[in-house]
Amino acid sequence: MNRRLNNLSELINRSAINHEISIVVFTGAGMSAESGISTFRDQNGLWENHKLEEVASIEAWHRNRALVLDFYNQRRRQLLQVKPNKGHEALVEMEKGFPNLQVITQNVDDLHERAGQTNVLHLHGQLRTSRSTGPGEEVYDIDGSELTLGDTCPNGFQLRPNIVWFGEMVPAFEEALSLVSQCDLLIVVGTSLSVYPAASLLDYVSAQTNILLIDPNEPSFRGSKRIYHFPAKASRGLMELARLLMP
Ligand code: APR
Picture 1 (cartoon, rainbow, N blue to C red):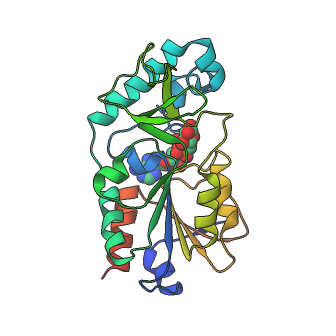
Picture 2: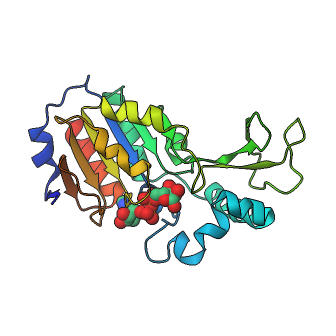
């Protein structure tokens, strides 16, 4: 059983906090929910309204490129209309006191960066960039929201969304693993921890490292590690945490 916290100070008082420690914040779709971006697996989530295998796999891309491009064009259009929320802002505030703070996100939006976060590692790619389907797999910024059939890299290869689809390798995983295995405090925000290998990052923290889950629902993940669950939305949980860490 993960330990449920009624108050974040219970955990902070028990952790050895100083400004040199390395904090990793691992975020998922719940981090951006209060900005107005749907999560994947909640009621009315993206995967309730779309068949995952029809839009987010390499098979889908080979079967119907236009459909896949359209799905991500819609996501990009939505992203251009939303803003970072108070949770993103609280993390930027925390970075001022903890310069080593590192965000690892499963999100493909750029809301952490737009809030002003410095160190952000994207595990599942980025919506606002495209990738060449040629052998070099070069990455390009997308101007605006649309990526369409016929948009090619300078070498003439079709551009695809720069998203890590189901069944694909996660190129940033090794780096994430190294960051997590060295951190002194792992804060996990707004993820159901149901997608691997991302969720397995929690298995790599050291035995002395506390893991704090901030999520209105308790994620299904169970480990023998020191896992504490604070049931709250990202904005409330992170604002409270920032207040405690940066009095
Ligand atoms: N604040 C914090 N957490 C929230 C909020 C909120 N306001 N609203 C919802 N949540 C939580 C839910 O309780 C749930 O645990 O966010 C989590 C969302 O889980 P998922 O929809 O499964 O999203 P995520 O874990 O990020 O998915 C992982 O799956 O489909 C793929 O590649 C996609 O990166 C994604 C990966």
